[in-house]
Image 1 (tube, helix red, strand yellow):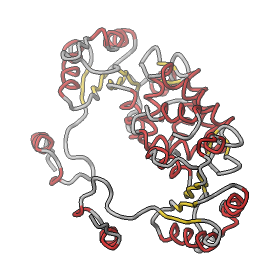
Image 2 (cartoon, one colour):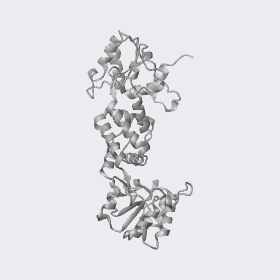
Image 3 (spheres, chains in turn green, brown):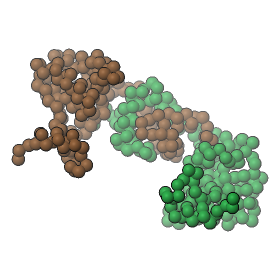
Image 4 (cartoon, chains in turn purple, red):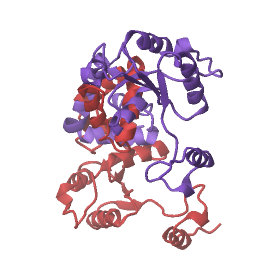
Length: 197
Length: 197
């Protein structure tokens, strides 16, 4: 490599981002150097700021820049609903949908016997505390439709079913989805949950 | 979006990198926040350093952190050969190959009638100066095998053929390449440049 060590160091770090490899990291770094004022400097500043300020919400586990996140402090969202998600990316996906106006609880993963992840390793005890402390009418389990996700949902449902209304996201055909491209499990689920017109 | 403005700002900037879109930028930023000490802080520092130090070599156009790049100051590479490439990414690709031990000249693009790019917009006058000023025995035109790349190579060759030996990269079957997957032009070029065994 002919570039000097500072540039090599930046390439090595960029290559550790998900979705980038050595080749695309080099392309990105060249792009950054060419757009130094418009992109590289602002990006360095934004990263330093997030590195300094980002923290997990002590209540729900969302990431933000204060100890309690914007959603947990937003009184218009105190509607008694908590949506339980695996991680922050899922929370962001729900928010992009824009249909949910309650609060969240980010578990930080799923139970996994293989990886020795138990309830204490996730934010499950904190969820139990919240159901006791806040005025909660419904817990929506929006966990991924994977084996570990569904195991975790069952575990939480077992512990909460006597205390609060529980629900989970509907399974079925995605909007715009074509049957021909769907897996058999999804088609079976959509069929057994069919709605009368 | 539920995250606060600093995190949103970082996502927006990351999404402007080549190879990343809004979705992968969000994934990358979450990854960075989770790896704050090991990745986000070093990356912010490395970017700030490159933003401050990176510059184009005044001689050849390579990027580095000094006015004259490491290759141009390396006396062991003063072998009389200059390899002309379109941009720094091509220079890096040549260096990874490791077969070339001379110096480079980065044009910064190709001539293009459509985009109104003339010789003065590239580092072509500087190349002419170098052939005069340095002791150059051979100019290797390693331009891309595109129409604009070959037009640029012809333009330079016209102006230098009376002054210095000229060559271009061989065209043919890539190492490990399978004929079945090669385009017709490459096969024709490889056939007409066939070597006697």
